[in-house]
Image (tube, rainbow, N blue to C red; front, side):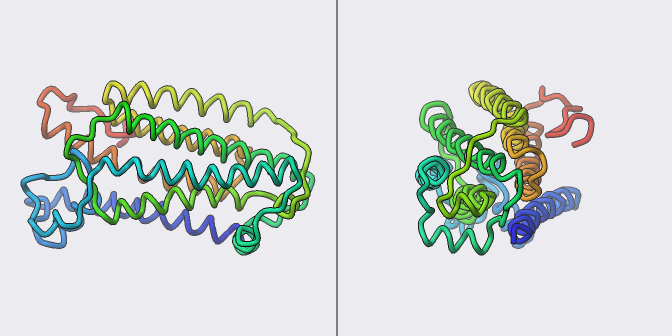
Length: 284
């Protein structure tokens, strides 16, 4: 069943790759695509400063919500993933079984792991869920005290997708937990070298992201966001295929966001370096 979760994240990654390719193809068309379908597509993938303000049709404004509602994503993540973290901690260290409804979900999509690496897998999941929870706290604090949203907007579809994402990503971590822990049979904790590297990389990337946000370097912030999820993949011990699909999704999601920001800066600032790449040095 883990293959189902991996396939779902792989499809999301493919969807954002397709959005990126469609955007680039549309940008190369004469006029950049001015029909109704193109306008709706561009409004769907853009948010904040990359929205085309005065160029938008009146009907598109009805599908927008304030960008400052980004804070809702992190509030939901803190509450949901905090709840999962507490229940997983109780199962890991206190011998408590996960609630029945979580067990049903886990039975459908979780890992039926019963080998010698069970202790490591269990602690990795707990650690990644903790890092995800801390990341949500950092992003909420940045939204409340650092970011300046002005009158930026996001599409209602993006808003709903963002809420669903933070529910899904924590649930994906929980599904990596071994069956023994799910049933309340706590395991011993074994700390491995990849736990240390993953956590160290997470804190470095988080600090770098905060610095970039403070100086409004949004293109670089996208790279830091990707590094945070890569650090979680390392914490899982490199071999968790499902989480690497999550990383792949974040990569294409952030690439699309970086390309849109890159184009905005090129249009608005004549001093913006002409040969700077949006996301990947020397390539894209």
